Length: 144
Image 1: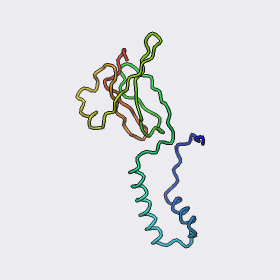
Image 2: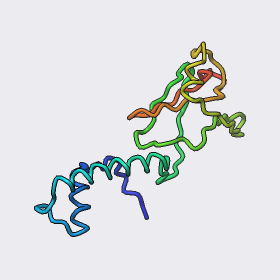
Image 3: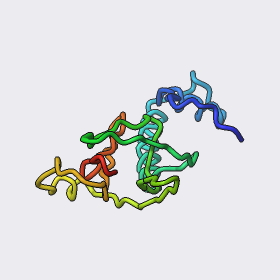
Image 4: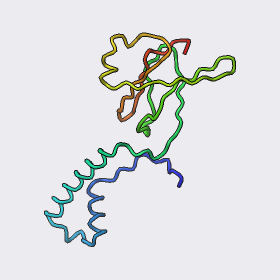
């Protein structure tokens, strides 16, 4: 099945609740306060269950980011949920070589005393913002 390319689907919780009641045969005019309280509780339980399952990788795509000497942080597409692997590709004399880079946790990245140190990057920090960012360490130099 092909992906639609749409990443902004976000119906209101009230619409989902009304649809769920409709599917089990409860008309909108028959919904009571107890139904609403139960729906609220179930919505919270569903969110807990989904968060425990971790991200669902709907698509697996290769994202390439050209590096700029002296630039440590790059903005990634908002649709990016998780980085499965990250590697640095260098090309010398027509031969490409890949070197794996390892992820830093928030605490490990925060503990780096000099985040401006330059050199070939060996690690990255993936910042899961609404618009995600990746920060490389050391900061790419002209040799990377």
